[in-house]
Image (cartoon, rainbow, N blue to C red; front, top):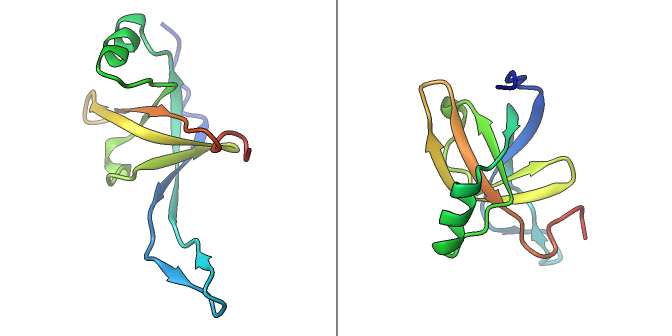
Length: 108
């Protein structure tokens, strides 16, 4: 089994209040919290079970559960992912199953 390195920084993203600037344009005021994590391989059986439920997980990240407050999305590098499922494995580890949506990958 590979050693867990906890060397991947991810931003947990919580929605902010809906506000506009003086010109009426929407203002992005999302709350971001940077946490350490590691990426874990999605097991084949988990991938197929999720697909049967209509879910298509792209990646799996592990964080500390005390750092998670129900945020709906994360950013890793330039990529935005939406959290589709969480699973608390222990007091020290929580899995975040995530997917991408069209237009949220690499700023495209």
